[in-house]
Image (cartoon, rainbow, N blue to C red; front, side):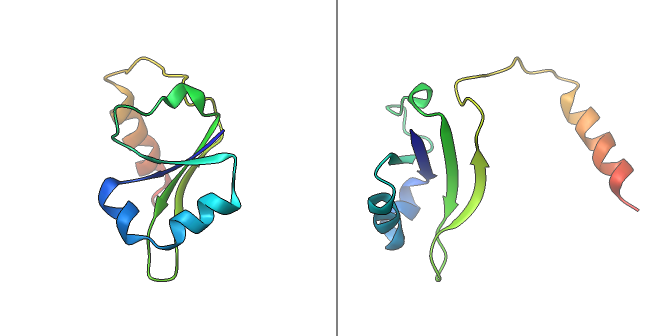
Length: 88
């Protein structure tokens, strides 16, 4: 199942989101911080941002959303080093 993820305030502002939900009957529109959302029931999620010209996809996750890895406190420093190495 596909999760179309939005925030609570944006859901009411985005007139295209219900249309998108109707076009994708396998999708469910969910609010990212809603504790009632069963994230393990989704195999794909898409984070959406409402804009004047319609929703924009911010992120598309096609990995298993219920797969969570432990947090490594050194991960941010390693990521920053990679980004620095890519900057000319």
